[in-house]
Image (cartoon, rainbow, N blue to C red; front, side):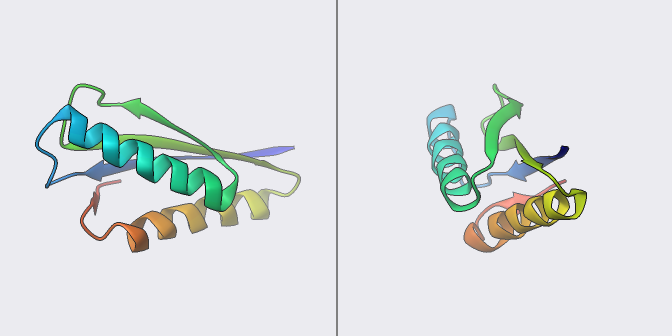
Length: 88
Protein backbone atom coordinates (compact mmCIF):
# COMPACT_ATOMS: atom_id res chain seq x y z
CA UNK A 1 0.00 0.00 0.00
CA UNK A 2 1.31 3.44 -0.97
CA UNK A 3 0.01 6.82 0.13
CA UNK A 4 0.22 9.95 -2.00
CA UNK A 5 0.04 13.24 -0.07
CA UNK A 6 0.15 16.80 -1.33
CA UNK A 7 -0.22 20.24 0.25
CA UNK A 8 -1.72 22.85 -2.06
CA UNK A 9 -1.32 26.48 -0.99
CA UNK A 10 -3.54 28.98 -2.78
CA UNK A 11 -3.85 32.76 -2.71
CA UNK A 12 -7.43 34.02 -3.01
CA UNK A 13 -7.06 37.64 -4.22
CA UNK A 14 -10.81 38.18 -4.62
CA UNK A 15 -11.72 36.90 -1.16
CA UNK A 16 -12.92 39.70 1.14
CA UNK A 17 -13.87 37.66 4.21
CA UNK A 18 -13.62 34.25 5.85
CA UNK A 19 -17.10 33.55 4.48
CA UNK A 20 -15.81 34.03 0.91
CA UNK A 21 -12.84 31.77 1.67
CA UNK A 22 -15.10 29.08 3.16
CA UNK A 23 -17.28 29.11 0.02
CA UNK A 24 -14.23 28.62 -2.23
CA UNK A 25 -12.81 25.94 0.08
CA UNK A 26 -16.01 23.91 0.23
CA UNK A 27 -16.67 24.17 -3.49
CA UNK A 28 -13.13 23.27 -4.55
CA UNK A 29 -12.84 20.43 -2.01
CA UNK A 30 -16.12 18.89 -3.15
CA UNK A 31 -15.13 19.11 -6.82
CA UNK A 32 -11.76 17.46 -6.12
CA UNK A 33 -13.38 14.67 -4.06
CA UNK A 34 -16.06 13.98 -6.65
CA UNK A 35 -13.69 14.03 -9.61
CA UNK A 36 -10.76 12.04 -8.21
CA UNK A 37 -12.08 10.07 -5.20
CA UNK A 38 -9.34 11.38 -2.90
CA UNK A 39 -9.41 12.79 0.62
CA UNK A 40 -9.25 16.59 0.90
CA UNK A 41 -9.03 18.80 4.00
CA UNK A 42 -8.18 22.39 4.85
CA UNK A 43 -5.09 22.05 7.03
CA UNK A 44 -3.56 25.49 7.63
CA UNK A 45 -4.28 29.20 7.57
CA UNK A 46 -7.78 28.88 9.03
CA UNK A 47 -7.84 32.52 10.12
CA UNK A 48 -6.32 34.06 6.96
CA UNK A 49 -9.07 35.02 4.53
CA UNK A 50 -6.88 35.29 1.41
CA UNK A 51 -4.89 32.08 1.84
CA UNK A 52 -6.19 28.54 1.53
CA UNK A 53 -4.10 25.45 2.26
CA UNK A 54 -5.55 22.09 1.29
CA UNK A 55 -4.10 18.64 1.89
CA UNK A 56 -4.91 15.93 -0.65
CA UNK A 57 -4.35 12.25 0.05
CA UNK A 58 -4.86 9.05 -1.93
CA UNK A 59 -4.05 5.39 -1.34
CA UNK A 60 -2.92 3.05 -4.10
CA UNK A 61 -1.24 -0.28 -4.63
CA UNK A 62 1.35 1.32 -6.92
CA UNK A 63 3.46 4.39 -6.08
CA UNK A 64 3.34 5.58 -9.70
CA UNK A 65 -0.46 5.60 -9.61
CA UNK A 66 -0.52 7.61 -6.37
CA UNK A 67 1.90 10.18 -7.84
CA UNK A 68 -0.15 10.38 -11.03
CA UNK A 69 -3.37 11.00 -9.08
CA UNK A 70 -1.79 13.78 -7.01
CA UNK A 71 -0.36 15.39 -10.17
CA UNK A 72 -3.79 15.28 -11.80
CA UNK A 73 -5.37 16.96 -8.78
CA UNK A 74 -2.82 19.79 -8.85
CA UNK A 75 -3.37 20.26 -12.60
CA UNK A 76 -7.14 20.24 -12.03
CA UNK A 77 -6.87 23.00 -9.43
CA UNK A 78 -4.69 25.10 -11.74
CA UNK A 79 -7.04 24.63 -14.71
CA UNK A 80 -10.41 24.90 -12.99
CA UNK A 81 -9.84 28.02 -10.89
CA UNK A 82 -7.87 30.58 -12.88
CA UNK A 83 -8.79 33.28 -10.33
CA UNK A 84 -6.69 31.52 -7.66
CA UNK A 85 -2.90 31.71 -7.49
CA UNK A 86 -1.03 28.50 -6.71
CA UNK A 87 1.69 29.36 -4.17
CA UNK A 88 3.19 25.96 -3.40
